[in-house]
Amino acid sequence: MSDGPSDFEMSTAWRRKTQPARQDQGLMMSLRAPSHRALLAGVVIGLFTLAPTATTQTFAAPAAPAPVAPELMRFVEQPANRQAVLAMIQDQATRLLGACKSLSFANDHVAVAIAPRFNANGTPLHGEWKESWTATGCGKSKIFNVETFTRDNGAVSRLLLVPGTTIAPPGLQSDALLHAVTAANAPSGGCQDRTILDTAFLGFAAAAAPGNGPSPQVRPWHEDWTVDACGKVSVVMLHFTPDDSASGIRVTADARPEK
Image (tube, rainbow, N blue to C red; front, side):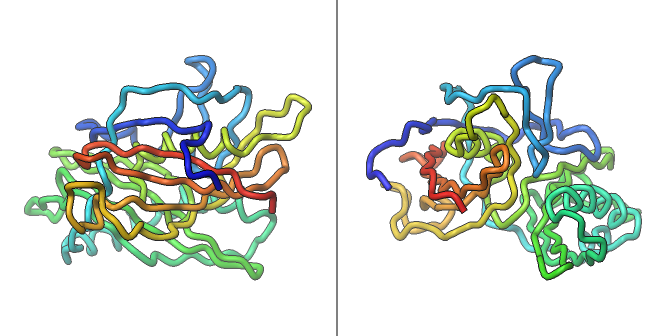
């Protein structure tokens, strides 16, 4: 692993959008043509050539999870919400866990990014949270994630994220994916398919960004992203480094040996 910047280094930034994604969709990326898009979370990304490019986005450091209010847990556990989230996760799990027909699913964790308000009917308003589910079967298990957004009028939108334990928020995941699939070079022959199979949060660095104290939210952290590039599976280590003001996060990638 090199101590210097990798070939895939890119400084990026992100601000939370006030308008959430369309209801129940995967995190989308614009590819080579405006009309050609692919799901970020575990879906094959094909028909395009990735090249690192400079961006002008700004990413906020991951926020400390807010406490999960009892009202929110009641909403999360409602059959309608469970069915909507589980339908998205089951579709992704079917693609990533192969031919296993005996999968079971359990909602293991809820992480609140923006604590919602609640109206008189118990409907969450203006909130954002992530549900993490574990799929188990055929001797395998994997974590799947769905981000839920609620508007002031009670409308609900859901976003399918990359699988695994990454702590990167949705906007930062889009950038991290570009680094991961670029670092995981596909075999020659023209194939451009890429699939994010898994992610793993490895831990925070010991030191915070200069001038920002010991808060975990401004410490650099590291993750492994597992990429299937046209049948070649490799693990890419991603490094997330907040800048001196903690208002932006730089992402760098190191390709690791093929699995």
